[in-house]
Length: 307
Ligand code: AKB
Image (cartoon, rainbow, N blue to C red; front, side, top):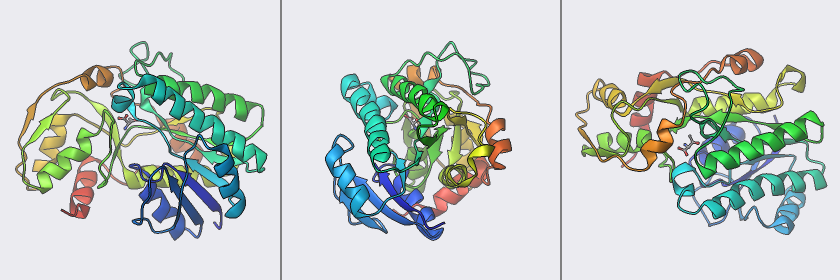
C-alpha cells in the first residue's frame, strides 16, 4: 500500500495491532502517544493531540499522508473526569483534522463506538441511524465527533472513515472501558485465577476479535470512496456475548474459570448500549465478514496470552 501513516494514542488497546498489520501491508508507520515506549515495532514520538505545532512538525518531518487517530479516554474512565474526557476526545478529533487540512492530508481513520447509542435507540438490534442519546461523556464526545465527521465528509472537506467499535478482544489489556471484562476474564483463565465481574452475568454486548477490527478498518481505508455509501461511521460487530456465556465459552476450551459478581457503575453504562448491531451495510460496502466467531476468538487470544 505504501502509505506513510501517523497513529495517535498508539499505546492504547488498538495501537500495536494496527501498527503490525499496516507495516506487514507495506506501509511506513509513526506511532505517537503521550508517554514513551520502546515496545513498538516502528518509529515512535511523544505527541499530545493538543499540541498543534508538534503535530504539524511530525507530519512534515515524517512525510505523513494518512492518520489513524486513536487518542481517547474510554467510557468508564471518562465518567471520573467528564471535562477532561470531552476535551481530549473532541480536541483530539478537531486538532487532527486541522493538522491534516493544513498539510493537505486527505484521509483519516477515527474509531467511533457503540457508546453513541442510548436507551432511546433500539438496543436489541441497533441500526446505523437510530435515535441516539448517549449516557456517558465518552459516548457524547464520540457522537459530537460523528456529527463533525458527517459535516467534513458531506462538504467534501476531508475524507474521514470510521467504524463504531464494539468490545474488542485482544491479548492487550484495555484500560477504562465498560467492555474490559472480556479481556480480563481471558487473563484470569490463563492464570487459573477466579474472576470478579463488574457486569451482571446476563449483560449481552457486541464484541469482536482485534484482527477482525484491524482488517475491516484497513479495508475501509483502502477502498475507493465511491463504494462508501454513508458520511457517518458504520456499525460493526462479530458476535454477542455476556459474562456467563463468555465464561462457558472459555471453559468449553478446557479451562475451569470461576466467576463471581460485584456489579458497579459500569452496569448502567452497559445497559444503555446495544446488545447487537446491524452491520449489514459495512459487510456489503467493503465486502467484509469476520473471520472469528466467539469460540474461535477465545481460543486464538488465549493461545497468544503470555504470562
Ligand atoms: C469501552 O468499553 O469504553 C470501549 C468501547 C465499546 O468503546 N471498549
